Amino acid sequence: MIDIDFSAQPLPEGPAPELALSHLDTLWLQVTGTLCNLACRHCFISCGPKNESHPFMALDEVRRAVETGAAMGVKEYYFTGGEPFMHPEIREMIALTLEHGPLSVLTNGVLIDEELAAWLADTFERARYNFDVRVSLDGTTARENDAIRGRHTFEKILAGAVRLHRAGLNPVFTVTTCHAELAESAGRQRFFELLAERGITRPRLKFLAPFKIGREERRGGAYAPYERLTEDALDEEARRSLQCSSCRMVTAKGVYPCPILIEEEGARMGDRLEDALAPIRLDHPACYTCFVEGVTCRT
Amino acid sequence: MSHLRRFAIFGGVYNNFLSLEATLAEARALGCEAIYCLGDMGGVGPCPDRVFPLLRESADLFVMQGNYDHSIGHRLEDCACGYTDPRDNYYAQISYDYTLAHTADEHKDWLRDLPTEFRRQWGGARVLMSHGSPRQVNEFLWESMCPDSFLTHLLDEHQADVLFITHTGIPWQRRLPDGRQVINVGAIGRPANNGRTSVDYALVEVEGDEVRVTLRPIDYDHQALAELMRQEGLPEPFVETILTGWWTTCLEVMPARERARGRY
Ligand code: SF4
Ligand code: SF4
Image (cartoon, rainbow over all chains, first blue to last red; front, top):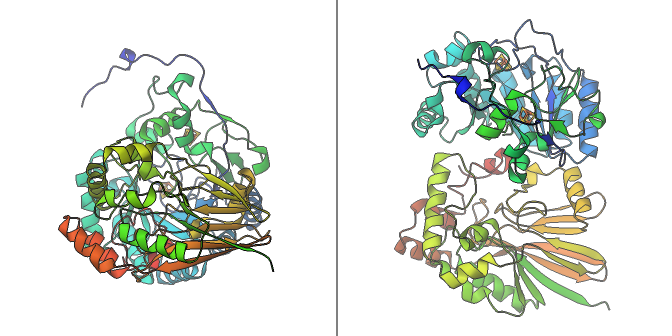
C-alpha cells in the first residue's frame, strides 16, 4: 500500500467551467430509479433493493420524455436504473421508445430468463431502429466479479447473457475497471477468452472507469481535493468530448445533466426536459473522471 | 419535355482503383454532368497511388476530404477511427500504415487541401454533401441509428433539402415525412456486408423540381483486386471481404442491427 500525500498536489484555482448543451443527442431515462435487485459495491448511485430515493418512472412519464426528446431531434435513447427489468411496464416502455429512435437498455442481466430473452430478440428483429442490451460484468472469474457485484452473480450474469446470445442478440458487455488490470490489453483478452468459452465468439465490450461517489466512495476512496476541473483545463475539443455537452437524464424526480450525478444535491435542473437545456457547471468531482478518463456512458 | 440532368455521387474508395474505374466509367456512360467523391481514398485495398490519376484533374470530378484523407494528408499516426476492439484496431492499423507508406507526398498534400463539403442547387432543392455528417467529419450515420426527427434536425440546422453522406460503408436512403431526403451513398471500395461482391454508388436524376436518387450496384474485377491484395501482403480477412461480400473487420462500430445482417 502506498500512501499518497495529497497536500503535494496543487489545488485547482479559479471557478469550475461552464458547459453548454450543443444539441440533445442522447436522452437517458432512469426508468427504475435507484431500485435494484443487486447492491454492487462500486455502484456510484448506491442503488439497491431498499434505495427509493429515486422511484420508478410511470409509463406516461417515459412517454412524455421520449416524445419531447423526439421533437427536439434526439439521436438515441438509454434506459437505466437501478435494474430496468424490475419495472412491470418495461416492455411497453421499450416498444414505445423504439418507435422514435435507437435504444440501449443497461441491465445487470440477472433477470433475463428464456422468455424475456426471446421477447428482446424478437423486439430487436422487428424494430425500425437499433436496439441494444448492455450487460454489466466486472471480472473474468467468479471471484473477481462477485467481490464487486455480490455472491453468485458471475454465473447468473453469464447465464442471462448466454440466453440473449442464443436468442439472437449480441449484448454489449460493460466492465467497470475496479480491477485496473482488466482495462489493459491482457485483461481484455481474458474477457474474449471467457466469452468464447461460453459460445460468444465476437463479443462487444465496453470499459468504464469507476466514479468515486455513491457506494464506490466507501469501497475505493473518495476524490482528493485536487481532483477538480477548472476553466483553463478545457479546450473546445475536450468540451465536445464530454457526454453532458449532448445529453440529459430524466428521472421520476426531475431532470439531471447526466447519468452520474442524479444523487447530487444541486445537480437537478428542473421538472421537465424543456427546463433542463441550460448550460451546466462542471463543479462536481466526478466531472474530473469524465475529463481525465474520457468517459462516455454511451454504447 | 423537361430537361433531365444526371449526377453521380460515391464515397469510400479504400484504395480500390478497379471499382473506381468501373464507377467513373458507368457514370460517364450514363451522361452524368458532374461526379462527386465524398472522401476516404485510402484503406483496405492495394496500391494507394493508383486511385489518384483517376481522381485528380478531371473537369467533371469534385473530390472532398474524409477523415482518412485528413489523417493521411497530415501524416498522422492512425486513421482516428477510435476502435477499442483489439482485433479491429490491429487490422485498422495495418491498412493505415500500409496506405500511409504507399501514398506519394504530392498526393498526401493534395488530400490535405481538399474541401470538406459541397453545396449545390438542383431543381428547387438545396443539396448538401458531407463525409460523415454535416456537423462532424467522423460521425457515423447508420440507418438504424438515425431517427427521422434527428435527420430533420440536421437538415434544418444545415439548411438542406437533400443530404448525401458516406463514412459508414453501408448505403441507405430515406425520404423524411416532410419530403426531404437523406442518402448514405455507401462505399465503392468494399462491398456492403451483404454477401454480394458488387459495390454501390448513388445516381441522381433531376427533372424539374424532382430529385430522384437511386443506389446502383457496380460490378468490377474483384478477383483481380483480391489477387493484387495478396501480392501486396495485405491481411487475408480483407481479401475475404472482397471475395465474399461479408465484412470481417471494423465490426465494432457497426450497430447490432446492421451487423446482424452480416455473417460475423
Ligand atoms: S451497479 Fe448496476 S446492478 Fe449494481 S447496484 Fe448499481 S444499478 Fe444495480
Ligand atoms: S459527471 Fe461527467 S457527464 Fe456528468 S456533468 Fe460531470 S462531466 Fe458531465
